[in-house]
Length: 614
Image 1 (cartoon, rainbow, N blue to C red):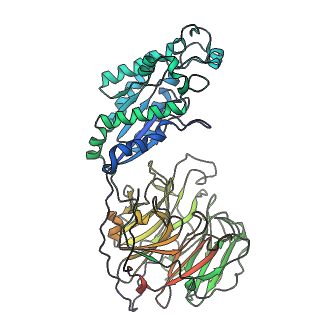
Image 2 (cartoon, one colour; image 1 turned 30 degrees about the vertical axis):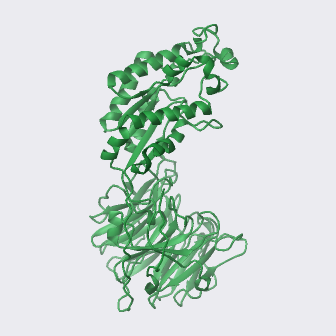
Image 3 (cartoon, one colour; image 1 turned 180 degrees about the horizontal axis):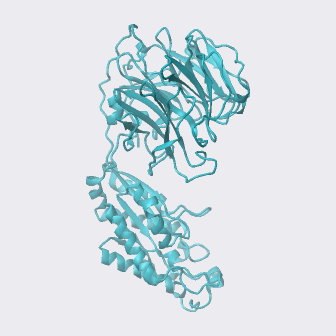
């Protein structure tokens, strides 16, 4: 649980600020590729040209730009489907460059299926391509048109398409219709004054005999060699037209560095400070949450399993140094389906708090303790309207005034309601005005098409509420959204520094006003990726995308990235108690560990090797 209270009356050493430069990423050029079978990934097929394009463009622009290429092409999509998907799958990604490769699916004639006319008529195809270009340009994107290549005769294509209107005696007979559609693409490019990569025209000049190694057995689709050639030609076209240079000047996608140059304090080798909260041979123990009970003891709850399973709770009465045996729990706690979270919710007008335990997915359920953590109720669905659910309920929560507490979680369309809804990650906010007994219906506050933002961790900074967000597509830094009006409205997501890229951020306010944030390192280029780490810096560092003052490696995880849904508390003697799960012993299941950290330790080491992103 998040605890941002200062420890009044405790004398801590003020931590000096490290004088290290903030690395600034070069501007980002985002390229989105839309097309059909000639651009789409195919199961068991060769690596498509869009997947090769990012490396080729990066090689041409060097360190001056960062290039991101996203491929939204789909097999079998004609320009009719492309127009239908354009806003959602292309323009919503805010591209600098849109690469369009239409024509193959539109010109296809399904002779084996009894068809004798192209999937999309030539006139409609011309209009659709022009509309794709116009719509892409309307939002400021540069456009590159790419022809599909020639169809060539093979034994398989003669068998499947060796009939009218195709002429097997003509070496170019299989390409009769496709060639006309490639010509339409060239005409639209000329009329619209956009660059074109004339693959089909180049194939015609080479002749069908030269293309044998560049088609699959059907004679219709590109081989690996053809995809390599297309990627080279398209990269050359994008770079040669000056699009990258214009995008470098205009791109709004420049963000903080993917890496970091902070000093690092490595505590992972000090096994003497590691406290075993719970460990069971052969049993996965994971995803803990903590809370300080009214009697000052610390409660820790976690599942017997990865994010789901029967819940276990222990108690520490000495600041986390030792832990009780497993406590007796209500019967329904054994039915938990998700990561449990513990929270304290003020009861309006009563001068006391309820303690809550949440268990998510559908339906979300909560258990109440009305006596400060001495006894607990069963898991039950909170009232006020239809049941709802979500993932990691609650990611975090915050009392915002004397009567209201806000809480946040995310869903990807699977669990919000009883029936599966539209896909895509979204962040939701709920409110309680009765101490957590009942909660409002979820309100969507963030849906971001450029990545998968989830698992909010909250920081209160004056009148502002900051939510730190995991980015689950693993292509971008973690992000931040801000509310300046107590959760009524929220900013657009903005990237955090690479030093904060990770999962399940939880924060404490240090006595000097800075933040201590614990999380799982998922940095795109971090050598600590998959370890339990922490960060020290100011709220302004978060707002402005600065890398902060210090990184701490708390413990080394020995299996992939499966660790560190962290919990943080202040102890009565002024120590940070950090608790989480992980593969702390090679070859064993995860277990729950705790560290007690003196804030006076959080000083930069004399020498630290900088870490940078790609």
